[in-house]
Structure formats: structure tokens, C-alpha cells
Length: 242
Ligand SMILES: NC(=O)c1ccc[n+]([C@@H]2O[C@H](COP(=O)([O-])OP(=O)(O)OC[C@H]3O[C@@H](n4cnc5c(N)ncnc54)[C@H](OP(=O)(O)O)[C@@H]3O)[C@@H](O)[C@H]2O)c1
Image 1 (cartoon, helix red, strand yellow):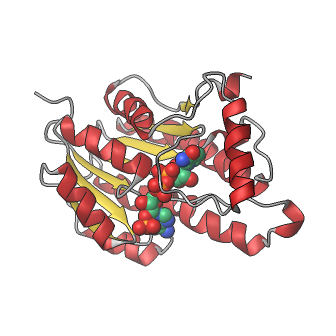
Image 2 (spheres, protein in one colour):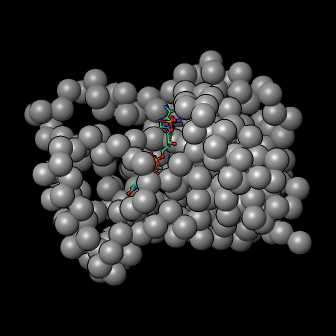
Image 3 (cartoon, rainbow, N blue to C red):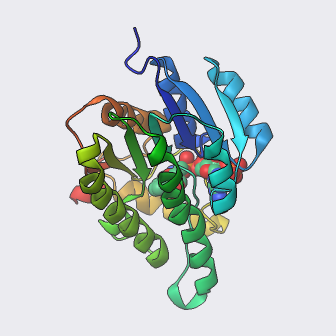
């Protein structure tokens, strides 16, 4: 018996990295997975690896109409986990606001749009896992837009937990620290990337990056512990405690 037997779980960004690790963990607990991302071949490969009837659908989550059309194909959503997104680094006077607006289109409005369309299909007992990042709780250099994004997602998630609690739907927010082994585009040059990795590890009391499986551990806990809602769960090796 799996802890998620019979559950239908939609994971955006489920083709790689954190989303894929969560999808694999949920499938191993019996959930039927629907993976969302833009690159269909990546999703198909991930779905094949996961098995258990998983399948992938190509959707750009920044496109409200595509998101609506995707959710129209589903009768029920028990678990929604929104991991689609990227990072935009840059000094504030060197980063055009349009780059941050685009970041919000995918990573904030993508999560909001998924909630908007999934919630009407969620029965009592439904679970929403948003994904932010520690940058609103800890300083991350040259990341003002990203930190605003993380704060916005956390605030939205906590508010939704209050709004949806009476309907028996729980909402929590996964907040990754520095997680290695993903395909995330940090838009940093090689030297900047080396400095970023060093700074991130120096900021992490455990002294090493996390792995996608650590996010999956937290996601399974949040998906199954029926009295946890409205929490931002920092999976960060202690970074935000410094
Ligand atoms: N890794 C970290 O250290 C870290 C730290 C803090 C926060 N995060 C956040 O955690 C989430 C997962 O990141 P990750 O590290 O696992 O990176 P990843 O491996 O690159 O996963 C991100 C996934 O999102 C999909 N995606 C991106 N934009 C999309 C869009 N507009 N529509 C649909 N799918 C989209 C990508 O697939 P396609 O390109 O095929 O669409 C990709 O599979 C992201 O939101 C990231 O910002 C990561």
C-alpha cells in the first residue's frame, strides 16, 4: 500500500530536477503522475522513467490559455505541485525590468494560474505545494527580482492556506536552498557561477548543496501530513538559520 494510492498528481516542471524527483517519489507511493513542462521529449523520457502510468503534457505555464486547456483535460486533481521556473540573477541597474517581469510570468503567474485552474477540480483532502526559494529569508547576491518572487509566492501560499482550509485543501510552500543536480539556468557566466556555488556552500551550515531527493522528502511529508498547512518549508541545509 502506497501513501498516495489512487491520487492524481500534477507536477509542473516535472521533467527535470526537483519536480522530477518529487514525481518519482509520489509515483513510488502509488500516485498517478501528470508532468508539465515545455519540452515534450524531456517529459516523455521522464514519464517513461517514472512508469506507473505517468505521462507528460507540453504547456508553457506562463500562457494562461494553455494552462486552462491543459486542466480542462483532467477530471480531478488531488495534488498540485508547481516547480516550473528559472532564476534571474543580475545587479539591479544591469537587469532590465522586462527580465524580472518574464520571471514572474512563468514562476509566479504560472503557479497562480495552475492554482486557479486546479482548485475547482480538487476534492476535500486536496494538496497544493508551491515552490519558492530561500531568497526572501536570506540575502542572495544580485537577486533582488528573484527574492521578490520568492516572497510573493510565500505570501500567496500562506493566504491560500487560510482561504482553502475550510474546503479541506492544504497549501504549503517548498523553499529550496542551494540544490545541485538540476538543470536550472542560473543565467550566470562561468566565473560568476563558480563564485555563486562557493558563496552558497559557505552560507550552508551543512557545507554542501542539497539534492533533488531532499526536496522530494519534504514534498512527501507535506503531501501526507494532514495537519500541516500554510507553512514555508525551507530545505536549505540550515542557510536561513544563519
Ligand atoms: N535548484 C535550486 O537551487 C533552486 C533554488 C531555489 C529555487 N529553485 C526553484 O525550484 C524550481 C525547480 O528548479 P530546478 O532546480 O529543479 O530546475 P530545473 O531542473 O531546470 O527544473 C525546472 C523545470 O521547469 C520547467 N519550466 C521552466 N519554465 C517553464 C514554463 N514557463 N512552463 C513550463 N515549464 C517550465 C523546465 O522545463 P522546460 O524548460 O522543458 O519547460 C524544467 O523542467 C524552480 O522554480 C527554481 O527556480 C531551485
